[in-house]
Image (cartoon, rainbow, N blue to C red; front, side, top):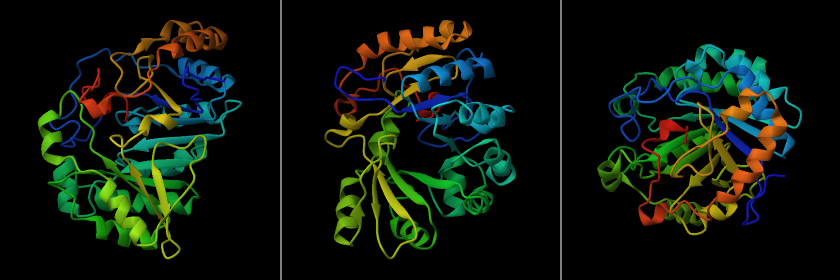
Length: 322
């Protein structure tokens, strides 16, 4: 089992398959994607070796991320590779939803179990203002299709003071009728968004207090769950989640490791740099990878230090899919 020196076990792999994204979200890529690094992304065979190695060490969940993962034409084959690996029990994906309506059936047929979709506003005009795309109606239709196919759906909204801070009631009304988990994420400071962060960061703690006052109850997290504190209410079809990376002890329950689209292991989203594991992947020998992972995990720190204004090597969230 992959375990660090603080006793944290890693059941969850976040695998980026591209850093390219076609959206221009103000908090991430306001000027759009710029190619400023090697774009020799992991091949399907390398991904197979990677997932096999992680699974042998106790990882049971793989989340495919980007950039925007649907921009890779071999996405269904990547999903199938993960789903057919012994030991992997759950295959998830994070997407901006651009191809959701047209491609959800192909992803499900390949073995996808759950989806995280970014929707930062339910107002079509505000959605277009944030992302640069008039796609909200299509994405909502895609969510309905995914739910009808039995896919577990989570929707992510980054809390933004100047954009969506007044939409909480609209979000709650949607969750009342729709069986999704709607997660509100505190804006995180990165190397490229410091001025934007200062203007727009909103704490999730007052929202948590409001939910508890209104009769919501907190769920117990599964061992392979993400970092959200999730809440349920008997009168609502869906749930509300809060991801608050600036809250006390946020990193105590860390259970996930990240691998970039070019084969770098990131022990934390805000680590100084990625650790190169691609030579082991190119050998197509998962046991070599397993040995290397055990050695590298000793460098994982207790916290991300975000609370001290530290952003590490993360210039923007599209680098590793969050």
